[in-house]
Structures are given as C-alpha cells and as structure tokens.
Length: 291
Ligand SMILES: Nc1nc2c(ncn2[C@@H]2O[C@H](COP(=O)(O)OP(=O)(O)OP(=O)(O)O)[C@@H](O)[C@H]2O)c(=O)[nH]1
Ligand SMILES: [Mg+2]
Image (cartoon, rainbow, N blue to C red; front, side):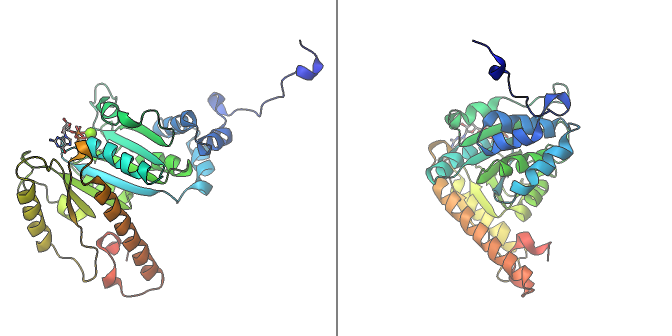
C-alpha cells in the first residue's frame, strides 16, 4: 500500500559518480567489506574524490600495526601471510592484507594466485584481503599502497600485512612504510646469502627462513646470522631475530607473531626515548634514520 507517508526520505546527496564518501567511511568502520573495497578502488584509481576520502579517513587512522613481508619470488610470502592471518585471528585480531603483485605492463592486472593461497580466510569478515597491481611503479609497491593501508587502518583492522615481492627497491620502500618488516628467505632457491641482495640485510626487523622442512634451512640461518653480525648496529639497537618456519603447516608462525609484537614494543619504547630527547644510540635501527 502506498500513501504520502511512504514517500522515501530523501537521501543525502551523493558526490561525483554517485559516491557518498562519509557514508562509505562509516560503513567501512562498521566492518562492511564492500565499503572497504570501494574506498581502496577510489584510491587505486586516483579518483577525483581522493582528497575527500583521505580527509574522511584521517580522524580514524593511526591504530593499525603495519607489517611488511618481503622476499624473493616463491619463498612463501603468500603462504606465510595466510599462516600469519590464522595466528593473528587466533589472538583475536582483525587483519587486513594487501598483496602487491608485480603486474604485467600489458594486462595491468594483479595475479589471482594470492587469493587462492590465502583462501582459508575468504569467509571471515574480520579478514580483508586485496591484491594490488604495482603497475610498473618503481620499487614494487603500488603507488597507492600507503593510502590503501590508511583505508584498512581507518576501517579498524588491528594489523595490516603488506606482501611485496623482493625486487629492486621494494624492500627499502616497504621498510619505510611498515612498522615491522619481515624478510623471508628459503633454502634451495639460489637464495644463499651471497646471492641475496645487500638490501635485505639492512631492512629486516625480523628474518624468517621458511621451508624449514627442506634441507639447508639451518645452514641458511647460520649464514644469515653471520652476515647480519658483520653489519654495524648501534649498541642497544634491536637485533633482528632469525626464525624458522614451515608456512604450509603454520610451524613456527605463532613465534613470528610473538617476536613481531616484541619488536613493536621495542619501537614504542624507542619512540618514547626519541620524544624525550634521550640517548639516540639506544634507538633500534628502524628509527635511526628519524633521529
Ligand atoms: N616445502 C615447503 N613449501 C612451501 C612452504 N611455504 C610455501 N611453500 C610452497 O612454495 C610455493 C610458493 O609459495 P608462495 O606462498 O606462493 O610464495 P610467494 O613468495 O608468495 O611467491 P610470489 O608471490 O610468487 O613471489 C608454493 O608452492 C607453496 O606451497 C614451506 O614451508 N615448505
Ligand atoms: Mg605471493
């Protein structure tokens, strides 16, 4: 039955292209995955609404812990990310994942493989997984990755995992963006320390030798430990631990989470030192460049 009372309440005017940014932000904060996806698409597409989106998100950001996961192709980054999501969910955390794929300059699209490898969490509303194409952006991150992190942060995810392939400058780029950087290596992949790019020895807060079910994992760890020991680190700085994992079975993964949290605490402590102007030689490496 229709009558004058049934006239639909006028909706607030939508912005350009029918997008109402404040409503999208509210829905994203309410845990609506489609709103999160829409906001990330707006930043990815460099929408004319980008400024409005970022301004709408700003009051809600600054809470998420951003973890970068980098390493050579095939070391097990996606499998490890999936395992980390499980470990973080078990600890009651809401987790956002950005998987940055090096994309073909022809297709411009992200690979689908990561969705398959992280498929364990497809039905969990407290997990949001998104592939982003790097589209030839130098360094291996998508240019919009920092904004996409902000979307997930504002949407209330406690941890944002960013998987990036260790090519070119991406290790350095992700380390600058992340609170904690995990560098993955694996035995039997030509990934010996000699072969490993110098960059990886500088950016890691935490090193993971994955595929520990294969021969050569312990010797790779030993070589890595020696190589890290040769680098100069100030007294009192965070000493990056080296952990062994089998990502496929989650073996060793809860320990990675525990050490990541410890590293985060170290960082918070160091920030406090920084704010109070205390001895900067006690700062962890990650903050050295800020001091
Ligand atoms: N034996 C063994 N295989 C693993 C382990 N972790 C991952 N793999 C396998 O290694 C292959 C590559 O794993 P991914 O997780 O796709 O590696 P990735 O680093 O994300 O690869 P790209 O994103 O292509 O760079 C897959 O076939 C995995 O099943 C592990 O701990 N042990
Ligand atoms: Mg991957």
